[in-house]
Image: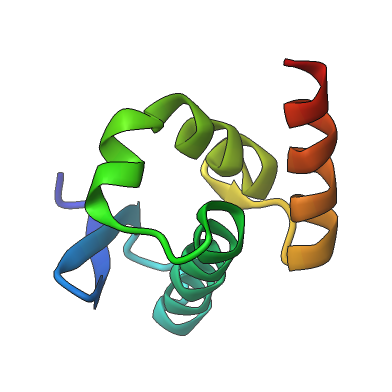
Length: 91
């Protein structure tokens, strides 16, 4: 655990945490958390705790679209939302 650090940010009573290497840039991951929350906000139309609890599988889908092997994969919110809407249409 000494090789990692936890970066977190609080949004309206919800804490979003990421565990990263100690050498990684804090600001990049704070920005990634912010981007993640903005995508969740668009996808769920003003996200709240209940959205995350009852739709955890959709949250994991958002994580899969934005992160790959613990690294930031996609930063474009429009691309992520477009992909999520396409996947949602397949359900």
